[in-house]
Image (cartoon, rainbow, N blue to C red; front, side, top):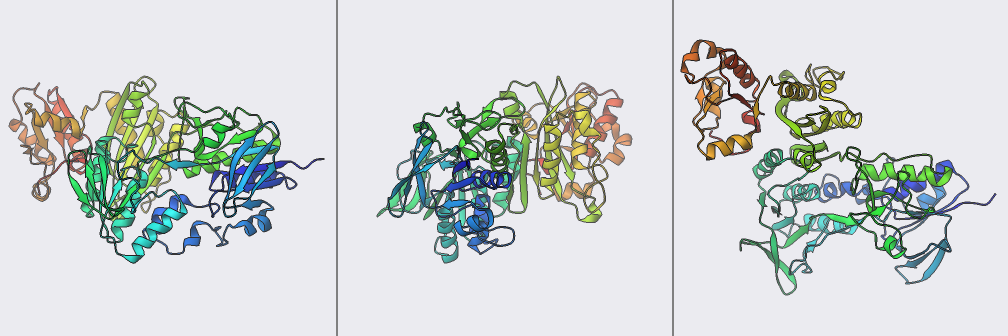
Length: 564
């Protein structure tokens, strides 16, 4: 029986996972990993935390849970896998089943035979076509080399002002890392919000939190030029003409699949220019598979092919490839619903499935709801969560959940992801059987409460209004009556300051005479989190008021300036 020759191109996450799984399933296979960079199995999602000083040992990014560095010796001794770092695959000969390689330190070229080839070439950073982009002091955070560079800047403490270009997940993590290092940070985002996996109102709340930590955020005003002197970065120029001085700029406007090798080999690419694979992660060549960020996978809700740049997905895809190249195409990869999360100072921001914008783009007629809730009882040191649900009106299936705040965001996004992957409806979410004890959650978990509020809206038991819609009404000076149902002490501490009337919920029944005589007039009820606002709205409707709305999320979720 001949030995199967397996060659893996790419040594970050998906490639090593495919190689390791193939080894476990076939101890006799000849397996080679070819990696262009000097390091193997890098925990790239950990780069911002190394830069920020959460940990100081660089090797923690490339070692096993037991502390062993994943170098070529480790791969050969522990797994029987040949690993060739600092080696580039420059050509694939599909007809002869060979790859041409070049050792980057010596320019020596050689051939490696394969029976099955795995492409895990990852991504490359997008660099905007902006004058001055090549100045010294401009970097990305795509590689270990980038992480080393930024960590050196942090440790030396010479840079005082920096700009992060791009307000996505990586951009915001870099913002935190450098701000904590004592560098004054400005984040510049060309769109009207940061973190586009969130809807605007939640992204705005995160933006407010970041600003409270001393960083600046500029949205809707892209960089038009990097300003330099003697080849070194000195500042940036924005579209509106503003110039900001800085000695460091981290470009984090996104990445694209690294597919030039696949394209030169004649492999089929998808609409988004990633390597096209089927449900078995097989390319248009039956002996070549692809996994990780370089390929396109299926969206589990729409069925469309898409790029998804997540480390967990890369590992899952690599495992599927490792199985299929050994035992044939028996294992399918079902795709993604785009579940992601990031830490930003004292908050976390997470999302799974569609946000409202993308649900509309996909053609759904949606209902949304937003709540503020506590992650556990107040007597256990609760922290708030602001959560939003998106559901399909017709099927009442939950399409997406977003969550931000200082509370346990990860738990709620994980719960929601499982529900969405299980095609669960709003009613299913209303009756989730989740673990409860005061140290961990409320008796009704925040996600269940979110389902209950969505059910109330779908069944017309509550009419909500978003902060954004209320703000637009206020700007237009619409004729409304705003009812704050909190207590006087709360009102003195903080309020919207938009002409509201304070009537505590405990006094509302005896003060109904203070409400508008016209029972068709629009009334907006709210409180700190709008639970009392909902109770007030129910009471008003029982007295014949016909146009009563609840401000969703209450004052806590109000993203605009408030009076104090």
